[in-house]
Amino acid sequence: MADDAPDATLGTATRDSGSDEGPTRSPEVAALVLLWSAHDPTRSGEVLLVPADQTLVLGRGGERPERGVRARFVRQRPGENTPAAPLADPKLSRAQLEIRATPEGLALRNLGRRRLRIDGAEVDRGVLREGRVARIGERLVLQATRRPLRLPPTVSGAPAAHAFGAPDADGIVGESPAVWALRDRLAFVAPRPLHVLVHGATGSGKELAARAIHRASGRPGALVARNAATIPEGLLDAELFGNVKDYPNPGMREREGLVGRAHEGTLFLDEIGEIPEAMQAHLLRVLDADGEFQRLGEERTRRADLRVVAATNRDPASLKHDLLPRLTLRVHCPGLGERREDVPRLAQTLLAAATEDDPALRERFAEPDGGFRLAPELVEALALHGYRQHVRELHGLLWQSFQSSLGGRLELTSEVRAALDVAPPPPTVAPEELGREDIVAALEAHDGVVSRAYAALGLRSRHQLHRLMKKHGL
Image (cartoon, rainbow, N blue to C red; front, side):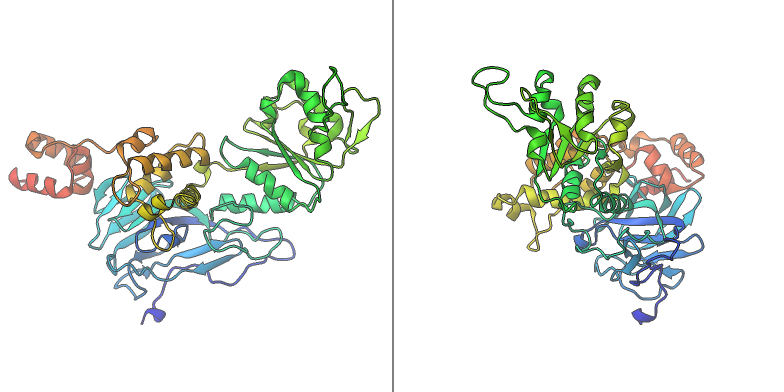
């Protein structure tokens, strides 16, 4: 019976709130993240923990395998591992993939009828190194990583309020440890009255983090947002602090200024690192305890009860030496390179938003349940891409696929491939171009392993190499 089968969930749905001395850190183990499942795309983000002393067998159903331990995915969240249902894809074998942890990575051996590809090359067995991707036919895309046996509990200790994989109340998407660390830091920072510096790469979600801080801060005023890099140097004081009527020129209207508008709320200054150091100094007084400032043309001093959240894509150390200490609390927004396992979920969220007012596009590419059809090659490429603009760049790549895909799913088209920072597929050669010496040299270079030698020769499959070996009496 499936219920009696040993499995490798390595955790239950019970919560771990830590001890009175604080939560203990779980050891890390090798893991496989389920990036995409053709049968059930909602499973994206589930993780298979691979202990060093077990051989796991991944496949359809929950029955006991003939050898090894049945692999089971979990939905890993702070303080809890919730076992996921067994894979139910009828196109997978019951024993599809054998998995072992080794010092070099995850040793994979294909047992089933669906072909195994590691880094794009079809193999019978191979080592999947951390960060790299394996595909099982057109059914599963998996990524090797390392995970703690349990994510540490959050600051509040409260369970997550949003469904697995869905955007949270602040629109943040992801189940990776990096995203849970971000949520935890935001929960710590938000209720405290100190000023904040949010730092991270362009497109990593710094404004989303600022809005999350304001929402959970309890401040009754508004969030006032401004890109500091767009303020002309000569107008910085007027923009920040405002001016009285007719100053500096007759006919000038009175302006409240960003600081005044943010009274009892939050002032979000994006790209603060783009302001010249001399101009950064103008912020120092308002950042001090009393929020003191003066409108241009006005003698009296005003005070604003505000909190400043500044953001930069630069090294925080590049800010003016006396500005940085006033931004007491820090939040790092991870780029997609730090949370590649979240890319498929982010893609689904971006696609849903992009087609919200485009029923024709949604009807063509989306399933009835709302999920979008993605080619596994596209999922793999997006997970491995070297992002520079991060979520913004992912959004653009998805639109490239929208424009150039011909069928009913988003494909890795030549236009998308041209925009990606991913190694192209290995070149292929005609079998008749290879002689006996070529084949012998490739087999010797790869210790006789056909599944490696055929890729090195540029053949399309190991079957081509087997036929050549038979032809040349090898």
